Length: 339
Ligand code: 2P0
Image 1 (cartoon, rainbow, N blue to C red):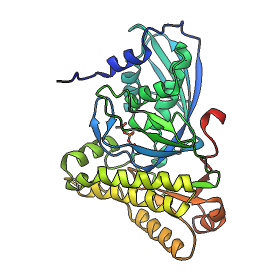
Image 2 (image 1 turned 90 degrees about the vertical axis):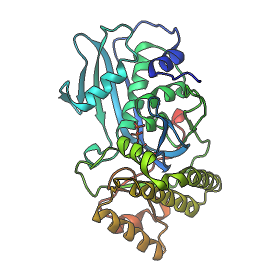
Image 3 (image 1 turned 45 degrees about the horizontal axis):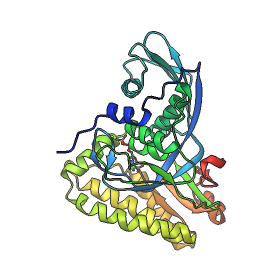
Image 4 (image 1 turned 135 degrees about the horizontal axis):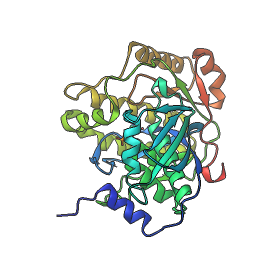
């Protein structure tokens, strides 16, 4: 039988015996990312190893800033300048993650995080948050790890965080190793300056179920999940071909269809998972109406009621006219190393 890897043993394998003295503080930023081909389902829940590969686009300046410094007593976490109580679920999740990295058990950290993604509106911040935290840890401890190694560590905090180490288009390779050493993000060489992502905030309330339990329930109970790996293989190939050819319609069709297929697997779970609100369905119909009117506009949707619009610079004015509240980002200008 193959060894069941713990997160701690993976961290030890990645960091090895790098032991530089901790610096006084370290700051880092990581962008949020939106998947064009979704990550939905794990083959290993401890290491956040996915059932399939996925492909995302990072959101430029929208993401998480993190300042990390050693402190005494217990860990201290501030978010947007406000101190979070020790029992806050976010603090518990960060503390649990930091336990993997403390040079000695007495070492505590002060984490000052600022999100520039609209978290209250249900846009994912765990991806950029864990990616920024792992970058800050690397800076604080002077490990000098590669972005690929940091991607593996970020995945242990939140799966989609492994795609947030880079700007631009990023593929998360599914991998097959039991320790997950071949399951990390990698930026595509391609850039696409004209691509735009619009964030459409429809509902700011709390979600009925978090994406982690929703994903698990889908894998365990949805008969629709059986078709998901084949759909991903098909959509991923289409997306890559579309990106290589700068064929926006092909990209939009593949991304929209992939998001709907993911939601179809959830709707077939028992009990069903339905994140859509009336406003979500209205927005989908508005997107399809725009397409009938000749605007090249597509949507994608994650584990929440909000919609992300995909279009190109050529249609930006027409899209904003139809969706005046849209927050537009130009996310894929160049790979992160050059940004
Ligand atoms: C994605 N989502 O590819 C998909 C689409 C939500 C819908 O990645 O349990 O917060 O921490 O690995 O990364 C959300 O899942 O889940 C997500 P964990 P994560 O963006």
